[in-house]
Length: 583
Image (cartoon, rainbow, N blue to C red; front, side, top):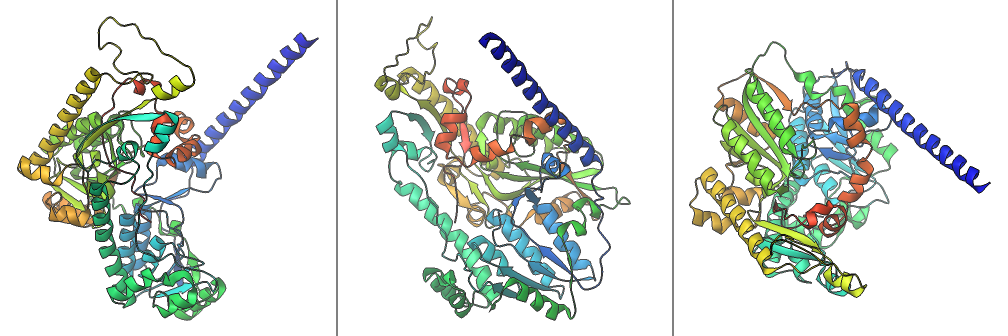
């Protein structure tokens, strides 16, 4: 009897599994069909007295990955916004006579500092057209307040608050944990500031690491504070006093300190907008402004290509959120082979990653700059490997708030020798040669392995410095001064000669067009990825898992999610020396 019950249970389980897969397949097909019939990308015709509502409380990419449209196709709300879409909408609204102003409702902006600054600058340009910008929040994070401070008037909920306190960064250290539980990282590094691996070696911050983080925070705050002070007609000193006193903790103190203009509930805030417009306002969203493609002029033949390089650099095919050799190089070749593309701007937003892939991409870009003008625009982060791949450019443009540099190399391998000894597990090896095993996570690394690893890392570091020397026309000794894995802000990088100028993506595009001697041009984006069912199944559904993985520290990412072969194969990294979360 139990035999037949087990058979029936197995059959039922298989039917349920196949049914679930069938539903997923139908959802995928439906999503693809919806993508192919999505609304027009053209700008909508607007009524008079329109106000653009900017609600920027979603994850902001430089450009939204195409696979995320799949969620929209299935009826889910989009989880992200594109910086290109936001800037296009603000610029389009500035030129539309039916748009009277902008209502900025972004109390929890999920963008990097330089992305936020680009939006802020676009809003400032909008105001210079004689139009108003009002901002409202039930509360404001510090980054959201930085954006809101550009508004003509800032309104806060009567029981709201502003997180206004200055900048800080926190790093977790694992040495004591490793000693206690016997799970550790074997570390090899070059560069005294290359402190990605520091948390595995000590239980407190080194003087060098503290120096670079403090210097970085001070430089970023100088830019942020001055811009907020100018917009709010306050002195830098008054702003620093407000930050130290946590003046944003109550609406009353925020208003007394000049951080806001008035305390209002949301419905009263919209009445303030109606007063400004003169009658009932017609509110429109970002989508009403059309997509960036709607600005494309078919009569203009010349093009400037923007090649987006977003995410960690991995030895992989790559995607729109991971820089891998295949997708990136194919997009580069496509832009090079298109006779209408007169110049290329690589938009880099990457903390770096795999050293080998960085070198492969560097070589292709080095060859590309001999064929067409090649410029680089740095986003929030273009550090280590992200800086490496920027070096072939004719000119590198960074935002003052960009994080770059980090010219150094490191590698880590997980080791559980102490842990397995404690629980009674022993690993035995048999080899034909003394170094055949390479590295085992169940044994202490041999001196031969460590010597070989140090030799490999020294070679990569030397090559990295040579690339900097050639790309920036610097003596190798000058490179060593700014290298050592040290991180720089965009402003500091400009002062040190690591970049050519300060500006945003539009600055780099204009410079590239000038180098190509074209006055009228369309801007086209690469890579061109249309998600097929395979891409959706492989990238669309695992988004939740990836979001969880990305929330983990480097220690747990390396230990839990690296492929098993990585415990034996040394993956050399040109990556940021720490996860920079600036609050």
